[in-house]
Image 1 (spheres, rainbow, N blue to C red):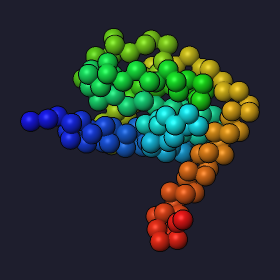
Image 2: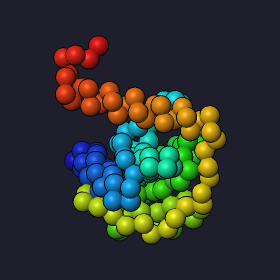
Image 3: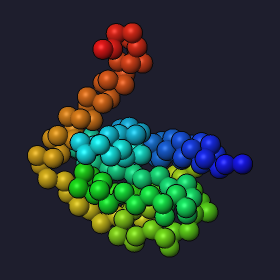
Image 4: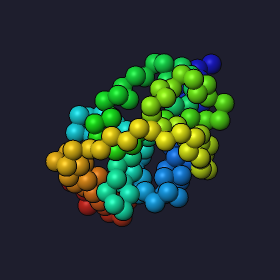
Length: 148
């Protein structure tokens, strides 16, 4: 039996808990946010002050070891975190990046990352993309037949 459906279900649940944690910290989160590079960040959030946070959800050790695209996200956020379940082996994760322990309902920040401010021009582009993504998702929800 394949673990793939379980892994996907777990990742979705962890992303939900991560989004709830970000909301409790004052961020507006979006899951599966696409960057201009075409890469998708698991959970991406914006604070009132425009601060950008990216979170890569890793459900298992194997998930982390098989997917090493996360360094490509670093230029697109002020803070980068890994969100992992309670039993995840933390020693696998880079110490200069943030760490959250999450479940399907919420989470807690274990370690803050080394901040790395986004360049102003890129920040403006990300804020525009974020706004358009959020508006398009709301539009699809409220009027799916009206989308072109």
